[in-house]
Length: 62
Image 1 (cartoon, rainbow, N blue to C red):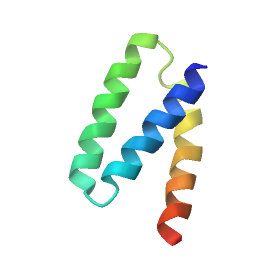
Image 2 (cartoon, rainbow, N blue to C red):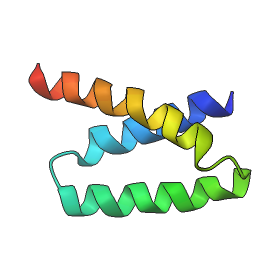
Image 3 (cartoon, helix red, strand yellow):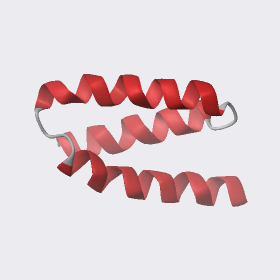
């Protein structure tokens, strides 16, 4: 369940801010900080970061 939350959170942030790299970096850092409370960083975060980035990359290519 938490893995899906992480995936959709990361994907949503990328969808909203992918055109503004400065804001994107800030929002991702904020999300990483919030997720530390679950004490699952970095393992599950890194696992879910890759598919989110792949999906965003595919979206950018059309």
